[in-house]
Amino acid sequence: MSFWTWFWVVGTWFLFLVLTLVYYWKAGEEAHE
Amino acid sequence: MNSILVGLIGYLVLVLVVGFVTYRFMGTLDDFLLGGRRLGAALIAFSERASGESAWFLLGLPGLAFVSGFSAYWTVIGCAAGIFLTWTLIAKRLRVATGRYGALTIPDYLEARFQDQSHLLRIVATLIILVFYTVYLGAQFIGAGKVLNATFGLDTRTGMILGALVVMFYTFMGGFLAVVWTDLIQGLLMVFVAVVLPVLGILEIGGWHTVVQNLQNLNPALLDIGGGKTGQALLLGLVIGSLGIGLGYMGQPHLLVRYMAIKSAHEVRRGVLVAMLWVLLAYWGAALIGIVGVAYLGPHGVADPEHLMPHLARVLFPGWFAGIVISGAIAAMMSTADSQLLVVTSAVVEDIYRKLMNAAASQRTLVVLSRAVTVVVTVLALLLAVYAKQLIYWLVLYAWAGLGASFGPAILLSLWWKRVTRAGVLAGLITGTVVTLVWYNVPALKGLVYELVPAFLASLLAVWLVSLATQAPEARPAS
Image 1 (tube, chains in turn cyan, blue):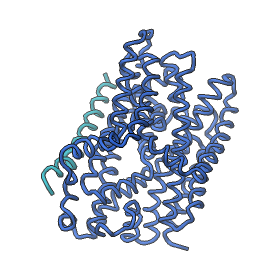
Image 2: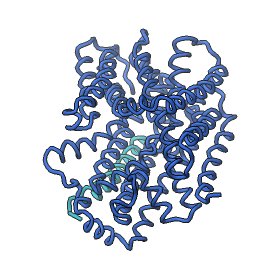
Image 3: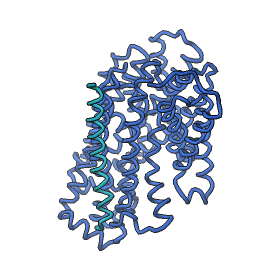
Image 4: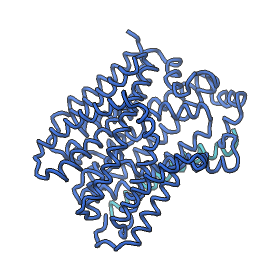
């Protein structure tokens, strides 16, 4: 498997995970303010 | 009895029980269409995910990966991006705005947001919903017939009627509440199938290394994220076209109403978390079913790539368990069909009857009428599925892109831009639909890129330009 296949398949998986957790955390902070 | 059928019957009994249990909670139209807006975001997230993915998710997507290998992940990435953007850009603001307006449907929201006393926005939006969703529903029933025929050997027409009757029964009994609770069961089953099937497949083959080795021996292009394509075919046809599928989520009323039913706007972040965890497990897993399938069975292992998932389940699992796994495809179909049925019901009862004909109708009358409409719409969609299959095939080709491109930009801008006008939204609704139809029917354009991408952009442009060219609305921000 090439680097680019790993990059897009696994990289985007982690990207969405991080984006989701950041949104969840930021929205939680806003709710408490 | 065929042991595979035991799993299916167990699943069907479970969803029918939900129908019985939720029957007594339907006191008002708000209860029937939105569950009284008392539902938690995690439950709604499961409902949105199960409703958002039809049988395509467990049959079509694995089939695509079976044929094209890892390049199918562009579709996965596009859908994940679309789901993430819809939840984060639309869910919270739509919940706040519709709660303030007391809107039960998307046409309700549009009319209230733009103070449209002419009802023109309501009428155009309702017409688009009625045409696309009745056809969509018919397509789900056709899907049920095909799946039950391919997997359980039932006669196609019997399968269609069985699928339609089960969906009609629990929606009739418990409205939105029954639909959401059955969606939870269906959503759990879908994610279970999408995770367990590829993992056990990899173990059966002998590990990930063997999967990759088999693909390398069969066709190295299966391992290439570009699918062996280069230039324009890679960039526009594969990457942009596949990513563009995700734009459709923003304009599907049967998904948007779910955000409107969350009990508070503060809960939405929990919905984002649950929905995206579902996506990260189920979407990446569903495509992996196809990858594992081709590595395990070879490119000619199944006659029809869309039958891969049931075939793999039969090969890997004992009969009754395979029955439960295969029911995942029926669950994916039903969880979409029930939500679409409820959207058509809401269009008839709320958007046409209550808002245009009889504003003084009692809640009891509206609930009784909703139940009656649920039956009539099911029968109509079933008749279309049986007797007008070609019409359904023709119209359903436009449904995802047509709805996404017409409602998506209008809803998005109406929530984020105060300057949007009624004329701008009308222009967007019409442009999205027309560009979808035209682009699809011009072969040179169709071959270039998936029609949703240009139609969505054209619709966005139409809302923006026409809004700027028309008189600014009185200040009434969405949130």
